[in-house]
Length: 162
Image (cartoon, rainbow, N blue to C red):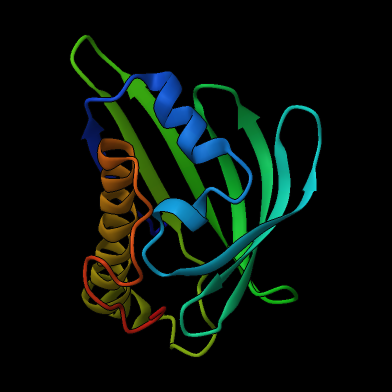
């Protein structure tokens, strides 16, 4: 199975990282390609569904299917009635820092021949997703360290989302 992952080590305590990534509308504060992030469905313990509108106007729905307080969550993301990608946000810690890892299992498009897909994934999809994830994680780091919302495209534009 194809996936892309990226992680960042933060000097913040685990509880602060959890609060930043689990609060309703959290992407509005640290996601550099987010135009708007609003919760659609929530229960007393977790977000169940929200939507993310990117700077380029593309709208994705996020459906959370596993929520572990202080540890992370799993979700499916994609266009409302389209194919979805699986995403895992996981927090871990040691004595000196907290690590946040985001792992994306992108859906496989039918537009690319199965035999060519591995090349397309490794030479196009993976570098683009890695760049995207680095920007999101750097946005979180900036937000946590400076207590300021990131500006749009703060770490550079992205051809898929800006």
